[in-house]
Length: 189
Image (cartoon, rainbow, N blue to C red; front, side, top):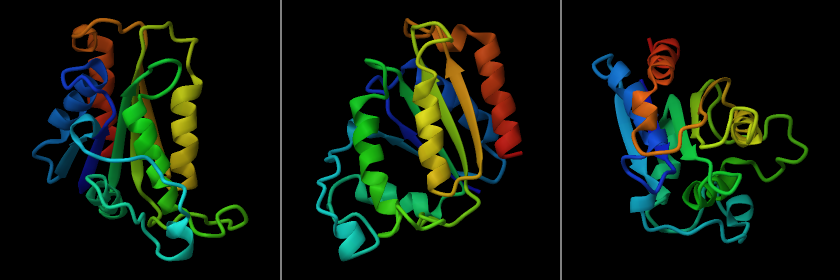
């Protein structure tokens, strides 16, 4: 099984990344190939609105560090997307990445009942962390889930870490770490 983890946090040791690390530790050695992508370390642009992915090719034409990541998603079995909630949404790094996934949609995506260029049947995990209580920012993972469903992902799990404020809080939260382990077993094992 191929897994690609797209980490949206600018903090390498951040809480959303800690949850993903726990998930990956659980599935290591289970015959999986894990690729980790820390968006903050890449040199890339957001979508340029050129529409070339709809008129000239079936891929994004921007040549930068994100090119191989987008290609890898076509081949992956499981996509993990993580981000802390910043200013009521995902980080800027993840937003730029998400904009570039526009290339995954067919030219007639508005009317096509199957608008995705990605192979069907992929699994996904969405991980978000936030300092706010559980009742706030529920729209953040819901929006990510809607995008992934549009791209043909069919088995999507969500892990939310709420009231996780300081570095290391996620790792100290046994329930959250247990959820990461259980979700790994559900999606991979």
